[in-house]
Length: 95
Image 1 (tube, rainbow, N blue to C red):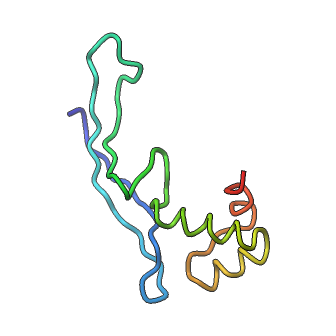
Image 2 (image 1 turned 135 degrees about the vertical axis):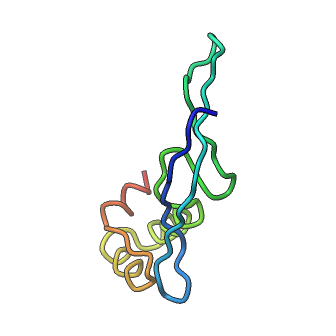
């Protein structure tokens, strides 16, 4: 183990309120010369994805809204559902 760091993830709302998960993650070092990555962080299956600032479940919810409504209507629904995201982010998820 190399180090630990704090990671914050946005999660699906509970009771109409936003939820943030504060996660303590371990960072490891690979000393094998054939390793492409020198350091890497542990992932929590079903909760985190690499470089993500939102949980897998929240991202899936955004994608569902983006497919159904896209742009401004999707952003309005997301805001009312307490999972607010901008229209440009919802459109980016469609790519």
